[in-house]
Image 1: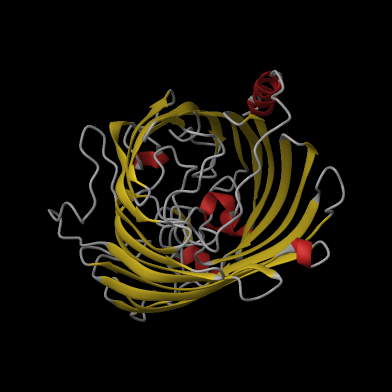
Image 2: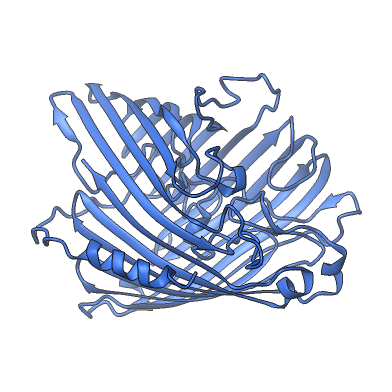
Length: 468
């Protein structure tokens, strides 16, 4: 779309022309090893009335997409359009005493404009979901010391969210009906959980398999997550084991059939303050079991390193990273080699156009970020993409939709998918108001040209989020 970039720049300039916020803000609390059972504390203070707390969120994001889904400029598909995504949340918490807290949060999401169906997931739509329950749990104990638990509908977030995260980028986000238990010591924490993902459906109560077994799918994920501070130069050193089962159908792109597999992994993150400005992070995972009734053996890894100019007022950082996930080498051998991406927040990792999951991929990147003002962060990212195996499909960020399915043409094609450029600006006006805008451009590679349509793609957006 020729008008895409000028429209975004004009809208962004209006968004940034705001009254500056006061310079004094409260410092962020010290991080606790690993993730906290409750959602991460907000950057704003919920309204407190005695033992009752109230929080409100309104988020709107205007998106423009062109060829993001089919890479075909000859067809004007429903995804080649613009729309406004709107999300409203209202949360109520009540502290019965210092050790027992009740919390419930409702959410209403709408997709306005465009020609996509208003059903979540149909033609890539964010869709509508009239006011429904996003969270409803009881919290027991002190999350930062000793034993604690959160029981009920809640977000799950582990490590860097490459395998399990709330996917807050999506308008509806992701939530689970879950039981989570935790023990926290001074240098380590251990979490145990079992959870069922909640399905979103408009004009119906959103349910998980924990509450509704009508389809006999029985989809659950359980696991242990150990987070430690035992490596002196790391901000965290984590180890985990997850088990996923699905009796009704296999998710993540596999054929229909029962699924039960284990994911074993570790995450290490270096502290630039203890490494003279350098940082590193790595996450590696191995999977074994069955997917769709077929034997699964798969693996994935992330390796990254960077340098931070800690004394510079702009806080620049330059980084390099490489992401890999195995693909299936032979779809006819009765075995699965495709790494299963579980329930991630992929939008943060493999390009903001969301063409890519941590499945069947080679993805080297160059990352650069800086903060010209304390309120504005600018991020520049460059991605390259290859298939790990041309005998497997190219999976989008949701792990199930395919950019290119299996085809005979792929056997002799190049494995190079293409390259993506991302620019992202995040502006924090004050503790209650934040703006986010970005533009992405994807240049099609030989794999696209040799297997079908191969038009370049664009994606742009402007977002405002208000929290109280």
